[in-house]
Length: 513
Image (tube, rainbow, N blue to C red; front, side, top):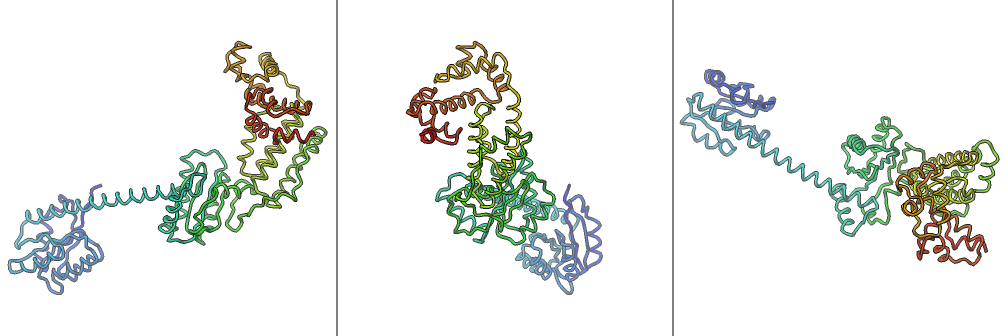
């Protein structure tokens, strides 16, 4: 779209005023005549109402002359371009006008070509000034974006798990002083509860930035979490609550307590700690600053889960309701005493391992993968769901004997025979025993057994270790490692053993004494 510049024509002689307005083809110069005035006062009033881009004016006029007009108008509207019409005896006035930046003056009587030439030069000046201004604004925007990117990087380093050097610490302090004027600040965390694509998370951040409009903030994305660092503002909760009416339970939200710049010395991951605040809340919860919990690590008052009781209920009852209630009762006790989620998850993982160990071969599963998932759980309710599904699976497996294909039966038999062999692997069996494609064997094994070949072998070796410990009182850890295919790496064997069973081999040995 072509920009049309507005022109005001000023002269106290009606014939000149009407003549110039008619003889000039304004549109061909990318201009539009928007008004005419007979004196300076009338012109000034028009300028204040309409703010023209160009004023063509006579110098000598009653009331307020051209010099007075440009002097007053330039104070408020410095971008106006002026063309002065001057008689020979008024040339000195024209020179005075140059002090106000007036560069174009024409001697009366002037013709169409002279005025057209002046307009052409002014339009060129306007374009060059606008281009220069646009260029300057783009540089400022780019600089601002670079500033924002730098701020985002500092926030990520401060709140996340990454390294936090003295240099970053000082940059963080400088950022707080510069961006937030040294004021108290808070972190607003939007934790994604579903597998949303990154562009959707970016869109969510953009919507949140609209909510934060008028506040001082820095917004960024860490993993699947939206993190907004913003100046402490009493309006924040009201704005968020209004916004939350439109947000589904795909997001859980935590608003931190206020921080001061002196808190910039970071000793742990603030983001992870804030996400842990969601543990005893359901998905889609909003945890405000005054609901932040100081978790406890003392577990003296906690009664551990009774694995034997759960097993009895699983084997005797027709439903899993009672075992699930036992788990939930334990979770409620953890919540009552504000036990740290990390400790709480440790309890549940130990319970899972002990349960599966007691049930031994009733169910085959990738325990290492499951432990990793349990460690990453955000909500206690998710642990309830896990055990609900586990108990159902245990009852189903217990009542349904497994039937394997001939190939899988052969694999299981070879694993049992070669469990001491450090070279035991799917590829080794495929090449040396079964003479089949290793990829095919891996897929059919996973499909029928329910876990990867390597995970099954690891579990089988650890279960065999427990069996040997029970039979041989004087067995050493390094001997176990050698006899079960771990070679001369008893430390790795012990780490795997503890990860799967919840205890080290040495602890199990002591418990059998």
